[in-house]
Length: 239
Image: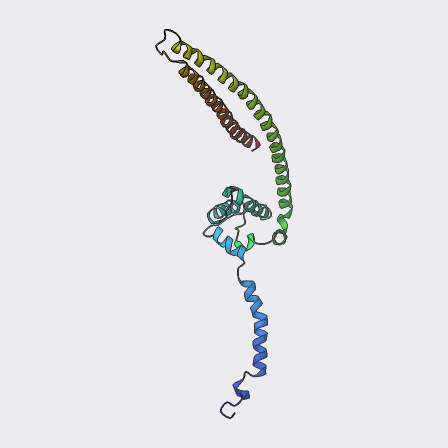
């Protein structure tokens, strides 16, 4: 229809202009995308905000950030959840010279890229890796030895306290029975009938059961405390 004539050439972008726009989009759009910070860089921009951090500082700064921001549903503590992530960045920072001010872009480089940036520091990084591997191996050895020691000591505690519990129940029962016999025998102040005396035996059995439970509770608490103290002692010894 003449009311809606097709667009003429002047109404359309010239072919040369269209090609130029396509060329600009092809060249500049990837550059814009590459310039945008990655999720890693955005995270470390928050971690390092307001800090002039050196490589040795990054692990602790990340741990603080992780504990404050990690949102998970797990029975593990925040320390346990954040430790692997902290360890990963600490391992990466071994390849960065210690006087370097760390930036988000630096933290987010791969180890190979960091080596390329600091070629003169690679030999020192390798030395630190070997040192840490030796330290980890020694900690693992101590941990295995500690597990064995804990097992032996736990058996000793159980053995001693099981015998103590039996002796406790036996001795307590004998003493309480003697007390009851004195209090309820002929000429005593408690002149009880036979039915009451039968109830006294049930009373003694209940006391003995409570004494046995108390003995087991002592064993459980002592085992827990021993594990805590043993762990603390070995942790100091491993430093």
